[in-house]
Image (cartoon, rainbow, N blue to C red):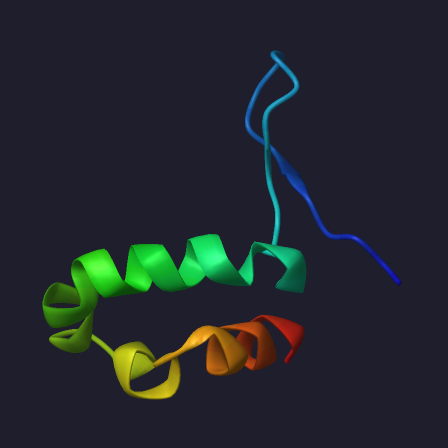
Length: 59
């Protein structure tokens, strides 16, 4: 599987896609910002539980 990453500077920090093993953490972030995020996109309608969070990250 190809990994995509963008360097954020000389300290080794990278911006990269979330992986399915982070589904629980991703869902927690969506839950905390569900109302705000929903004002800008439909992600809160798609990511509603751990299974849908994992499926979204796998896609």
